[in-house]
Amino acid sequence: MTNRPDNAADVLVVDDHVDTCRLLALVLNRAGYAVSTASNFDAAMELMRGVRFDVVIVDVGLPGRDGCDLLAAAAELYSFRGIVLSGSDPEIYRDRCRGLPDLQLMRKPIDVDRLLAAVTLASRGAAGPGASLPSQLFHGTPPCTGHFCSTSI
Image 1: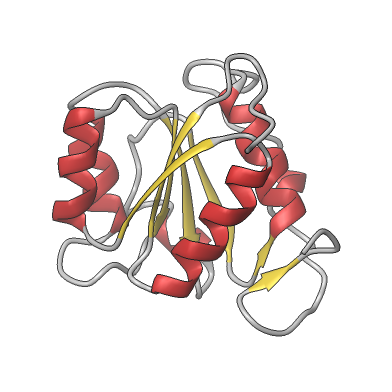
Image 2 (image 1 turned 120 degrees about the vertical axis):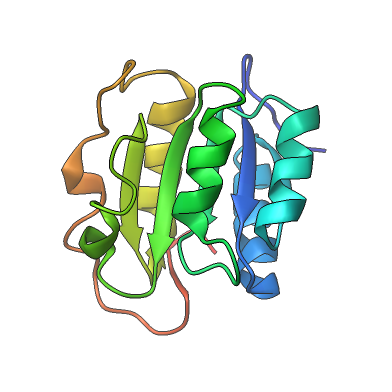
């Protein structure tokens, strides 16, 4: 049983790396969020047509149509806040994803504590329409091994 806080957000995690999806879903579920996962553009769009997600976390490097394509298509359905994950410098995707509202970029390896802070802020609407989350959440990630860094797992 999760300790889901009042008004907890519905979060969609989209990554073609199955272990990444599973781990992020586990971490977010333990934090009280309702989490769904998808591994590609089509599966994510199918989920988004059925559920109104508050936060969408997407790997920019999806096979076929990438994460920026997904966020652009999903933004036509309804508004949400997006977090784009990238194994390379996420700043190179800023122009590619230009025009998408409430979008943040985060580089892998993922610092889970920072990701949780970003999801918490986004899910509570702390960023506000058209605003961005504090950049300090996404810079200065300490060195670590593997795809994730955290003191909580």
